[in-house]
Structure formats: C-alpha cells, structure tokens
Image (spheres, rainbow, N blue to C red):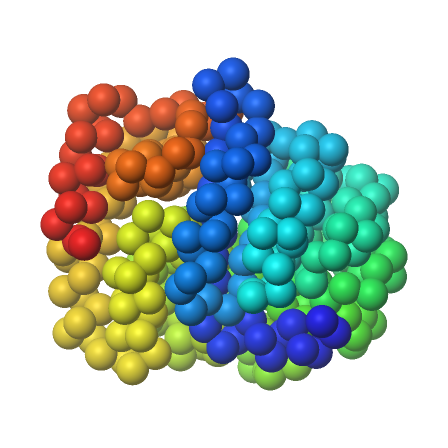
Length: 301
C-alpha cells in the first residue's frame, strides 16, 4: 500500500487499536492475539494498529514488537491495512520503521520519543529522519513530549511526502483549527485522545474524520454505531450513547492513572475473550471495578 493509498484508506472508517494479550507470566500470547484479530477483522474498520498505545507497545521489546506486527500481518492477511509502531529516540524509531517494512506492514505510527523533551525544530528533524528511512506511509502522533504546532506540521508535510496522517492526542481546539487551516487536506487527521469517542463530534468539525477506538476491542458493534452517529452528526444519538455508556465508562477509567489501557484489557476479559493482565507499571482493575465494567458492557450490547 502506497502512502497515498494508506491516507485515503484510513479516512474511510473507524480505526482499530487491539490489545496485546499476555500469559499470566506476562509473555506474549500469540494464539490469543491472532484469535482476537480474527474476531475484530470481521467488522468493517479502516485500519488496524498493532502494538500501539492500547496494545501496550511501550512495554514491548523491539523483538516482541516485530513478533506482534508479523502476527498481525499474517492473521489479517490483507483484509485491512496493518500499521506498526515506531517509538523511542530517532535511531531506535528508524530501526523499528525498517523492521516494520520488512515485516510487511502497510504503514507506521510514529509515537513520541520517551522522556526527552524537545523543541519544534528538533521534533521536525526527528520525524523527518524517520520518514526518510522508509517508503511506508507515516502517521505522526502529536502528544505528551512531542506536541507539534501548526507551523511544524506544515513544514513536515512539505518536506516528507510519505507523512500522510496526523494523530492528535491533545484535543486543543485552537491548535487543531490552526493546523487544519494551515495544512488542510494534505493530511488525514485521526483523533487520538484516550476514549476518543468523547471528542469525536466536536473534532469532526475540525477535519478529524476518524479516530482510534479502544472500546472497539470489546463492544465493536456499539463502537461502529457510535461512529456512524458521529458522521451523521446525530447529536441526540451521540449524547444518548455518551450518557448511557461512554461517560460511566470514563468514570471507571479515571480512578487510576494508566486505566485508559487497563480498562480496555478488562473489557476484553469481561466479554469472555483471552487478554491476560497488563504489564507493570500499569495495574489491572480491582475486582469491584471489573464487576462494574462487566455490568456496563452488558447493558451496552
């Protein structure tokens, strides 16, 4: 898939960010992962992001990421594009980019470099270096210590033909307005805030036509229905579903740091699928929280 084809494909529908199942000893459970992907790929989504944030890519070694990406490419078998992660410092991200291309991934999600803070000039050079290292289409994730201004995004779009998507993990309305006004449809815009459904309707007006749905992991039909309501700008339906499911879900998610990932894995377990625990430093939901989530999911299905 060329970068142009990837950009066009990703804006056609909801995006899936599957969890990465672990055994009880916290090793990768490939059989459970393949089974989960096989189930999710029955639904109509525009892209599958392997070992992303919801997939605990930050806790995986480079070798594990390569294994996860190869398993995804093999299992999905071309039914939907597979986007691999690249993270860490520039050298490490370049290695992961090249490994993803060799593994047969269709694109890359370039995540923020960990720990090190940087100015806009340094971030532009970092992203550009990764873009130069591969022919894959790249989505850059603007969040945490790598928040890109509209000026930086415009420079990156001008310099790097294979930079095709901006994933926004900040939700700053003014900044997104500035970015879309300056860059326009040169890029595809992806909503990337935790539980992106909360922000989907207002961000639609800013050119953010799709988003990463973590809840798709365990309530795929609800997630797709919600996305359809957003695209139709059916405010009554969107806010009804926010009140009935999403906001109560957020109330559980917000009880501990890191629960934005932990609650997704708990949701997969709550519907009877094998996801295993989260890896430290994340922590799993308490038994009481898990019971509340299970009840909430039962009402949403």
